[in-house]
Image 1 (cartoon, rainbow, N blue to C red):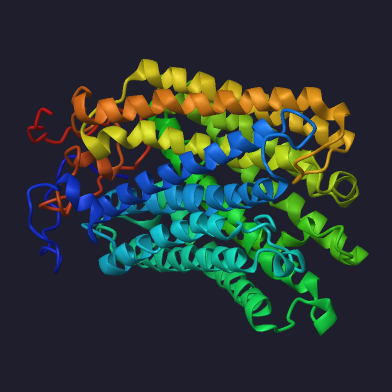
Image 2: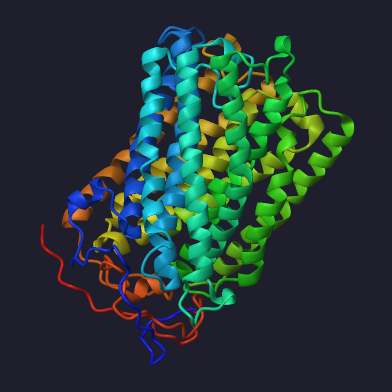
Amino acid sequence: MAQANLSPEATKTPPIEGHPHLPDWKWYDYFTFNIDHKVIGIQYLVLAFIFYLIAGLMAVAMRTELATPDSDFMDPSLYNALLTNHGTIMIFLWIVPAAIGGFGNYLVPLMIGARDMAFPKLNALAFWLNPPAGALLLGSFLFGGAQAGWTSYPPLSVITANTAQSMWILAVVLVGTSSIMGSVNFLVTIWKMRVPSMKWDQLPLFCWAMVATSFLALFSTPVLAAGLILLLFDINFGTGFFQPDAGGNVVVYQHLFWFYSHPAVYLMILPIFGIMSEVIPVHARKPIFGYKAIAYSSLTISIVGLFVWVHHMFTSGTPPWMRIFFTISTLIVAVPTGIKIFSWVATLWGGKIRFTSAMLFAVGLLSMFVFGGLSGVTLGTAPFDIHVHDTYYVVGHFHYVLFGGSVFGIYAGIYHWFPKMTGRMLNETLGRLHFVLTFIGTNLTFAPMHELGMQGMPRRVAMYDPQFVGLNQLATIGAFTLGISVLPMLINVIWSWSRGPKAGGNPWNALTLEWTTPSPPPVENWTILPAVTHGPYEYGVGIQPPQPDQPALDEA
C-alpha cells in the first residue's frame, strides 16, 4: 500500500474548517476540547493509562487480602467494591479507550491519508464523556461502592448500595455512548476519507480491524445500555423488569448483559489484532502472510461473535438445544482467530526479526493469547464449563486473554508508535526490562488460578478454605511483580518524551502512510496528501521506505 514519496498523483485539498493553523500543539492543548485527532488519541491513551494504574492498585490490594485465607486486610464490603470497580475500570476505561480511542484516533486518519476524522467535534465529545464516567466510578466509594461485581446481576445489584450502583450504571452508559459515537466516526472516516488512490485491498490491517470493531460496537452496545437503564429503573423507581417478586426475570438481564459483554472481548482484542498485524511485518522485515485472510477473519469474528453470548449462561437454566448451539458457535469463532495466529507465525517464519521491545511484546502476546484461547475453548464446551463455572479457572482464563492479549498488545503499540507520536525514541534497555517483568508477573499471577479453579476455589470471595493458600500466595507474588513492572515503563516514557534521542520520520523503515509525515506529525498531517503507489507490507522486495523531512525538535 502505500506511499512514501509524493507522486504526481498526490492530492491537494483545502484545510479543514475549524482547525487552528498552528505550527505545532503545546502541552496545554492536551487539556482542552481539542478537535485534532492526534491530540484526542493521546488524550485517550494518557487518561486510560491513569485509570490502568488506579485499577492496578485495586488489584494489588485485593491480592494482598488473598495472601491469607482470612479477611484480615480489608472489610469484605470494601473488597466487593474494589472487585467491582477493578473489572469495570480495566475494561471500560483502560483497554477499550486505549485500544480503540487512543490508537484508533491517532492512527486511522494517518494510515488512510486523511487530515482528520470525519466528525472532529463529535470525536472530541466522545472523549470528554470518559472523565465524568471515571469520576462517577471512583466517587461511588463515598457511598459504599457498587458491590455486585462488573456483571451487576439482579437481584444482588438491586438490594445493595443503591446510590453507588446507580453511579456505576450511569458511568457505564456514558462510556457506552462514547463508544457508539466513536464507531460511527471510524466507519465514515474509513469509508469516505481515504486518499483516492487507496483501494479497499490496500487498506492497512489495523484499519480493517477498526471497521470490524466499529460494526460490532454499533450492534451490541445499545443492547447493554437498554438493559442497564431498565436496571436503573428497578433500583430507583421500583419497576420490576428484573425482580422476580414483581413479575420480572433475572435471566433476561443476563441475556442483555452478555449480548454486549461477550462481544466486548472482541471489541478489546480486534484492535489489538490490528496492532499485531502492523508490528510483526515491520520488525520481521517480511511481507505479512495472508493479508486478505487476516482482513476477512476480523469481519468474521465480529459477526460470529454476536452469537456466542449464552456460553456464559450454561448454569442459568438454559435448555439443552441452546447449550448445543452456543457450544458450536463458540468453537466456530476459534477458526478465524486461529487464521490470524497462523498468519502471524508464518510471517515470523524466516524473517529477519529485530527483537525490539515492540516485537518482544508482540511475540509475548502470541504465547499468552494461544494459552488463553485454548482455555476459552474448554469453557465454551458446556460439560466442562458447568464443572468450573464461577471458579478461579474462569478468572485465570480471561486474564490470559485480556491482560496477556490486550495489555501486551497495547504495550507493543506504544513501543512501536511512540517515536511517531512524540518524535523521540524510547530506551530499549528499559523496554526489555519492562517486558521481562511483565511476562514473569503475568504467568506467576494467572497460571495458578487455573489449578485453583480445578480444585474448586470460588471467585469473588475475600475469604477461602486454607487448602488454597499456597497457590494464592504464588499469585499474590505475581501481582506485586506486575505492579513493579510498570515502573520501568513509566520512567522510560517520562524521560524519553523530554530527553530521548530524536526519532526521525521513519525509525523502523515502515511502509504504511503514517510514516510519510514528520514525527510528530504537524497539524492536519500533510500539506499535500500522499498517493498510494505500492502495498503496505511489501518488505524485502526492493521498495525504499519513506524518509520524510524532519522539522527541528526543541531541545527540552
